[in-house]
Length: 259
Length: 371
Image 1 (tube, rainbow over the protein chains, first blue to last red):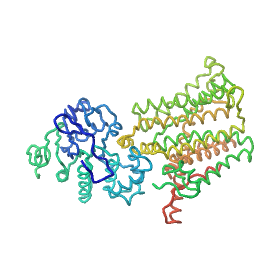
Image 2 (tube, rainbow over the protein chains, first blue to last red; image 1 turned 180 degrees about the vertical axis):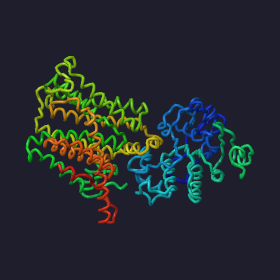
Image 3 (cartoon, each protein chain N blue to C red; image 1 turned 45 degrees about the horizontal axis):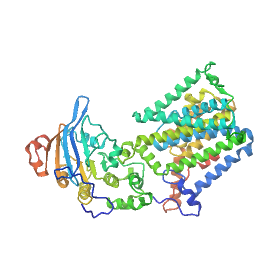
Image 4 (cartoon, rainbow over the protein chains, first blue to last red; image 1 turned 60 degrees about the horizontal axis):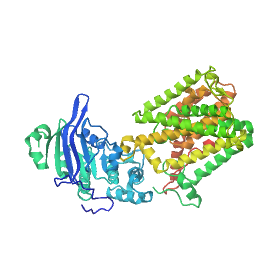
């Protein structure tokens, strides 16, 4: 898991689960009910270190709920979540983040009233000393192509720049696992290609595991190591992008006739 | 994030108090600030003891206003009941001080009063924030707390409502609260009228500088981030609930300090400190002055209370109407408040005058001198 980028820490602690794999994340019987509705129905999910997994499924399949359970914004009704070998099920969000889970929301949610540099300071001051702020800010802004926006108020950035800044802020936390909810929604073709390249780099060079919720199947094909299809709150299929694309059942529930 | 300019040894002194979370970071701002402090300090000399007596009450109000600007402007917690901590501290001081009017007793009364208001804010904050109360519900709940105290203290007229020698006195209030004094045994100082003015001014300046250092620290960034987007901030590993509790508690302590200085100035406290008019005033000061500007709120508190006082002196009933109109005007025309708007103008002016990157500039120094 060597890296070409010294700004980001690599080599997350390995969890040898006994079967020879190194799982960064695992859920067992994860379940979430809202009143009478079962949004997540006994999901057993596993993610390898450095893997880029795309999570797809029709609207209401439970994708965002699943991510929110992983971040701790929602409490599961039943089941456990293991991160890096430890049970994190009951932990509040901020403690999960301390352990290396990072999340990028569906809507770009940078701090619109703060400058780009101030935005980055919020995650940075959690993990580096004050005298390193400026250097780290420069490195991250350079990597995410925002160097000339240092003093720009984040609300004035373009949609694509906000997405990049937000991924930069997530990376500033030096995570081992990053969760992204529709990172390219509303972006142009070029911006989407930029983000795809960035996400692949983060998985390949930084060794960060990623779960990406995405609707755009072409984007999924560009970036995914493996794909999980959720339907009705349970895992419907799991496999390589080719397996998923050619699966007639998946086509029927999700991909539509033109795929 | 290039902080500060490199002009002289003063820059190093200024540094802890400066940063992007406060507006006045230039030498010109600090000069204005120094002028304002000197002007306030000269007030008793220029206008006599009576001015000091009245002025000290305004300065105590300014502390109350600053406590709200701190929690609302910097952490997004709009408390409509800052007066609860202000008044509770006043009553607590009175109860202890009346029962133990010695140097030691009065010192203890000061400490006890601030401890009580701090603990009260911590307890209320704990149940609110850990109970998931957010946004406008915090506003409503804090107002209700103040009004409950108003009603409760109002019905304490009977002789059975006494703690030792201190009678709570219902709507007639608790009178005979001793002056402030600090000391142990027989060594110490009793703080007289003039002394009280300077103690209050000193407390205001010290609190202002302390809060400036705090909001520009790492904790200050966490506060601002919590204000901007609480969920997002939690996802960067911040315990936002705890941050809000700490901020709210500090706000309660500062309001309590103001309450003690207010009560000892008047030697009297009554339930009207908890009333709806009193509860609204800090919100008016912070809205008009600019909640994100500590000094703007201080300036607005001093100016509004001064005008209110002058109108009341002339027998006019128009003070509240005027304050209400002022609030409406500011909310409609410059919703962010006077000081932040002034700051914008100054930044624009400087950019026009000098195309090199403009430093940040002061709000309300002149506004404050106006008193």
